[in-house]
Image (cartoon, rainbow, N blue to C red; front, side, top):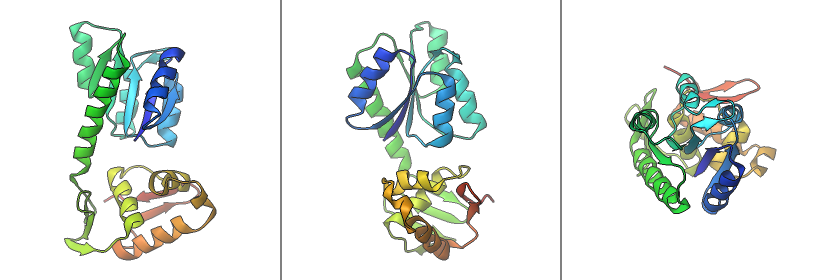
Length: 217
C-alpha cells in the first residue's frame, strides 16, 4: 500500500515512517502545500493527516480531495479531544487517533482501514459498458466476457477506480509494473494498444504530453 503521511512534527513523522515503511511505501508532507503536490502527482491508498499544520487546517485537504474528485480513506491525527472535534473528524474522514498515541495503536487502526479498503476493492467496478470483478479477475464489455492478461487487467482496474484521473507513463509504471525501467521501453504503449483493441480504441483517451484517461460518458 502507498500511504501519504501529512505531519509537521519531524520526530513523530520519522517514527511513523520508520515503522510503517517496513510494510508500506510512505511519502511524508510537512504542510498542506506539499500534501497537495503529492496528491497531484501520485495515487495513494491511505492518507494519515494531522489536523493542525503550519499553513492551515488538515480539513482543508478534505475540501481539496472533494473538488478534485479524489476518493481516499483518511485517518486523522489530532490533539483535540472534545466531542465536536471527534464528530467532525469522523464526518470528514474514516477514523481518528488522538495525540499522544502508541505506535502500536496506529498500526492496528491502519490495518483495519486497509482491510476495509481491500473489501471495497472486491466489489465490481463499472463504467462505459465496462465491468470488472477484482476478486475473480474477470472483465466484461457490454456483458460479454473479454480475455485480458494480468497487466491489461491491472491497467483497466486502475482506470476504473480513478475514472477522472489522467495517468502519466511514470505513474502507470509505478502502479502497474512497479518498476521505473519499463519507462525506457514500449511495454506501456503496447499494453494500452492491446487493451484498446479488446475494449474499444476510443475508451482510453490519450492526453497529449500528459498521459492517459478513461473516456467519460
